Image (cartoon, one colour):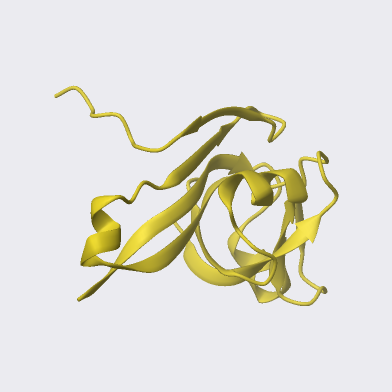
Length: 126
């Protein structure tokens, strides 16, 4: 059996640009892509915290350490500059791989600079 699991997540990154008349994609600071193990042209899911929109696109590289998160093309209708979004990528794992599996979770500050990296989501207090 194959299971689809969260591979990596950029948590609460801030949209810096929304470019309607640009080839569809999401430009992401190359340092963030590298930290999250997301490759250029890899499929990503975007969850907009501000408006609840959820959509699929692909990642392209933006300048390293620029903090750029640019939602492009038709997806620009779903995210505006200053919106907080979660960018997630998923992968298929075998049952054996799942036993050694840990996601890569990247946390950033208000300028999209990395402040923490984790391999699990801490339990929430009830």
